[in-house]
Length: 569
Image (cartoon, rainbow, N blue to C red):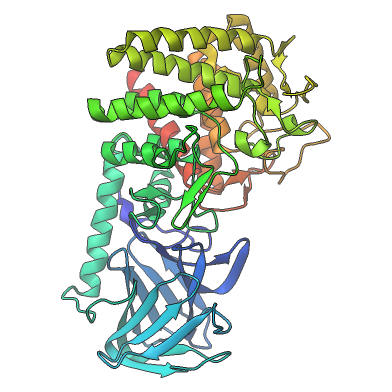
């Protein structure tokens, strides 16, 4: 088996970065915006392109990327290489090929753009960015560094050129000041060190891998490279959803990433699970999303956290200590009470969503008639969460709490039954009772609570899910309906989280054959089309953001579970 760091990937699909860094190199510079040249991009205070990298040649240039190094290779034999020395330092070197490093902003104004000067202390080129609120220092280690536009105001060229037969520079991202750059580590030593770091990461989270799961290393790189060190609001190491434009932690996405880390990085997995609970509000609600400089509470996300915690604990390579478990119990209790106390119409047993965004299925057809709905998936998630809380309460010596949560579980299970219509669940308006459309996969998500459902209901749900199954996996909207859209977000495409929740529920219901089919098809989808945000359900083409961590995480979880089933026979 070759080392994971020998992996090659397309930098147009997956950004080049390193675990811990808020920087990446990519042609993606904004929402759905791709440039011809690669850029240095920072994710502090949002996604902001800092520099455009422009090789100084008229020859064709191709890119080759591995976890440790990124190459620009010119047809005339010139070469530029990049390696992340640390989370805040990028090293570049060139042989027979110069590099222009240009300010990515068009103009300096009193509130936007980049100011550029030569530091009189060490002679380095320094760019200060209004957009990131950070400084970028370029220090020459060998060769010639030529500055253009230093101290210019307004619209002006701002760039440096690294040249010479062989040259090397360091680019640093920092706040107000740091000592002049020094390093005793050679470029080649850095490449070897980063390769070893990535190899160790893959071995930790995927020691189970075999040749039957061909995309494990790529999936691991998507997670590893999208991981950022504590900065800004995020005070734990966090896996962003992407280092393209989806550079946040959403309050259900993080659950799937935690599951992927659990086999070999238990502390990191628990931190990933806990990160959004650091921002729980006074009502117990979790934020919609968190990133470096922003916490949004205008929506929430579905309460899958009981489901995820139970699964997480079954995977972790070491148990959660009691103080942490008690803290998790309190946080999960408050999150659950939010739905009971703040999201139930007086006299109603069922909680409701206020918009599709609350469910995570932003534009699902289940929300076509009404946005405020009592939805079967929400009731099922709460049933599971009550069950998990009751188990935790018993484990922590809280029998009265256990009895209370068990009572809530029974009441919500009865309320969920009231949404059953013949062979599927409906959602209904929280105010008028009007019933929803029934052609979205969302209506079948109660399979996640299979152990709490009558066998006949689970069988019917399995059959309905089978109607959504394409060659690549479960479409989020029935393909033969008028509302289906190939690139319709939650109105057709295949998504990792819905696939993971349904596969797990089917397996718990004893519907092993269809669960196996879903797992196999989703793995094949990722191995064919990469780790996109979602996929065309008919063609398998990757859609939207092309380096999405929860997609990689679900692939790793499915692959590990498939390997375990093979081992157990």
